[in-house]
Image (tube, rainbow, N blue to C red; front, side, top):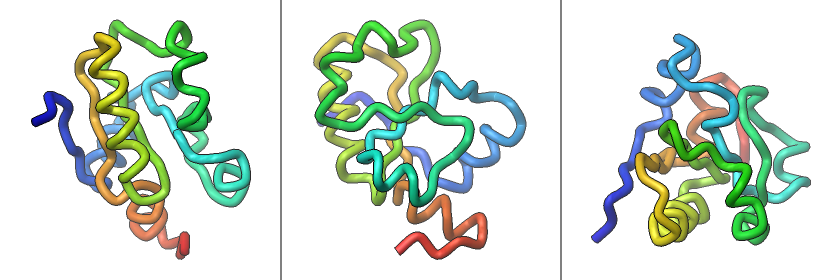
Length: 108
C-alpha cells in the first residue's frame, strides 16, 4: 500500500492552468527524446534513472507531481521518493499520453 496519491490528468491540468502548481513541482521522469517530442513547459525533466542523483533539487516544501508517458514509471518514482522521506506525492494518471489527449495532441 502506498501513501502517495493518483491525480487524474484533467484535474492536474486545471490546477496547473490556475497557477496552483509551480513548474518546480512538476517532475517529468521520461527520457530526453520523449521530452523533446512533447512536454509541458511548466515541468522539469529528471529522467527516472537519474532521480537518486537529483534528490537535493526536488522541492520538499510543496507537493510534487510526477509524470511519465503513461503513469507507470512515475508511480515507481513516487514509491521511491516516498521511501526517501518525501511527502505529498502525486502520480499523474495516464501520464503525458492522457495530458496530450486533453490538449488535442496524439502522443502515441
